[in-house]
Image (cartoon, rainbow, N blue to C red; front, side, top):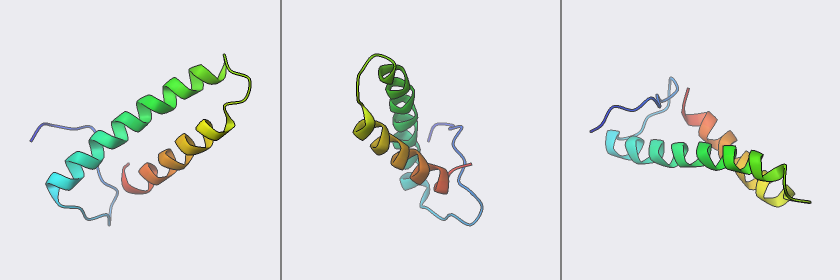
Length: 65
């Protein structure tokens, strides 16, 4: 297993392999959030995309510090 900067919050229990895969998803979602923030500056109404990304980030924050 590779070293990851994502650490589970206290009280969250996941199998190590599952946690590693969820951390990859979290990293991808964080990258998408950055991309969305940049894209929002150039589009007229990206509200739906922003809402989806925001929901994903909130879910990720429930699991990781």
